[in-house]
Image 1 (cartoon, rainbow, N blue to C red):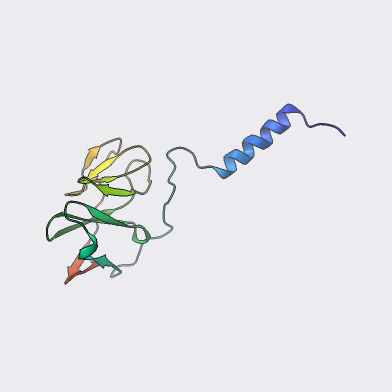
Image 2 (image 1 turned 135 degrees about the vertical axis):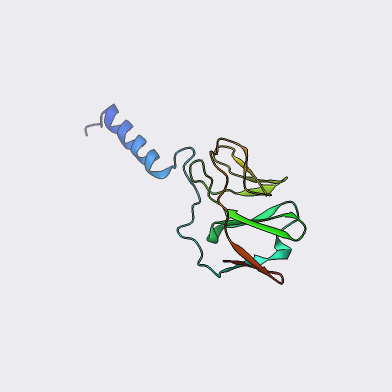
Length: 132
């Protein structure tokens, strides 16, 4: 039986590897669509003061920079479109290249993000937070 050549084996291995892996910095968990307007995101009790919560299905991050004030931003990093994954220590963090955004206004705290997170409209009624 004839053995395959080195180039054939290398092509098969590299092709299989490339097919199963995302490239560094490629969006890993980008949801397929955003939630419709008037979608209930959650409750005010879920949003810690000085921090926030990411609503993956809606591609929204809601923060509470000071007690009783709620802000909402797109959860899509403005650098290469990865989804932010953490809200802690006053920042919204993207894991792909280290961009960090302020929970106060979505502004860039650490790059390489070129722009702030776009704001989203929410309505807070009682303890319910709704995407407007």
